Image 1: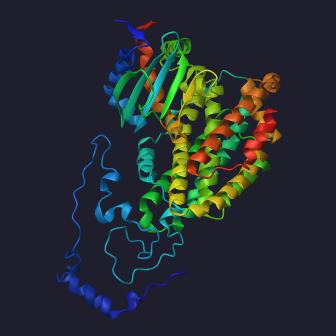
Image 2 (image 1 turned 120 degrees about the horizontal axis):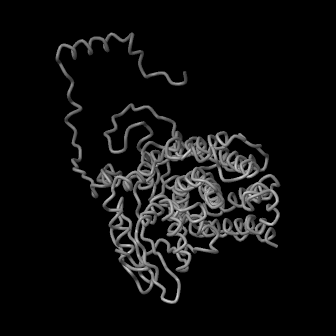
Image 3 (image 1 turned 180 degrees about the vertical axis):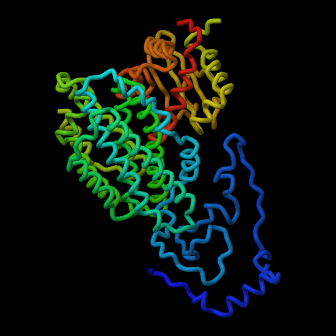
Length: 366
Length: 145
């Protein structure tokens, strides 16, 4: 145990005496006489219910969170009265701009409302008699294996940071919890699909692991956010879109349609986070750009890995025999990914003229 | 009675059906976006659809996208829209090759036109709702232009 309470309560006779008094009816009701701000919050749109935005009022509002949080390191909910003696929880992310995005509260509400249930909503019977060959199924299982690893890391990223973030940023922490749940569910459905298809999981491979490690090992939360939500989620998004486009059955099409929604919310958060951060601390841009260039380098490692390219080529062509001829379409997919990623970087304020991804795709096309 | 495609009445009918079927769309969750659907051809048409929570709250035909506040516009020739709706009408949901995702994926058949990446990503954030919206044409008697 690392934390010992400020008193040995059980062996303190004053504690027992006080408890006996209360049990005899001498209640201590000083806590009721607080000069608290009264507020009446109602759903601004009844169909949406009472949202975080509806309770963003007065002292409870996220607008009240200072850039540097100096007044509360406890577990107290933001806006509650803070008596002296509250334990310090050891949070070391106490700057709002380090994590905040103005769209995080709305994305949290959106994530809850758009929650889906793969175990029941995917028409699993479609996997039993797919309209594709065994070798296509083998390639699908390989892609689903890679997607499972990516989704698992997408859950690991917020879980690595959430407990370090000051409790004042509660809406952001709630949003991270939905990110973790979404990621768990994606890993769950990708894994199940690979196994249910009959060929089972495929091979793990070092280039994928290196990309995952470079994202997961980001040394600051902003770097993790940029590489995880702009780059990794961007890659997952386009792979899921591609999966939907090459799918031959309702199960894979459904997984792609719903999965793409989950990762796209995190992309929106990532852009919003970078914008908020750089509005407060523009000097951070250079370090994040450099980090993202480094992680793009590991993405190039994945995009050029023979196992990855040949899997995509087989899926794109529809068969082993047609895979070679499908390479230009894989190049078109990479071009689209590079263009969309570059546009997101520009929108977020972290564009780079040294982007390894752009340079690689140009070479690949040539 | 047959409804002409493309026409304002066609998209108004899809909106009416969506708003009359809250159970199906509440299950898919909040959808907040302003999107365009452009039909290319001899007589091009541009429609604006506003999605708000679980409803399609506004449908209108525009002469230009200027000032419409679109997050994104789906743009395709009339023949492709026709193929898509015909695929939907076979089983109630398009074949994988005719989903909005598949048609727009690489941009060589249906284009997703946008100014900001955040607007573009809304197409993917609300993909299931938008697909369900167009799937409602499954049993419409469509008169093709």
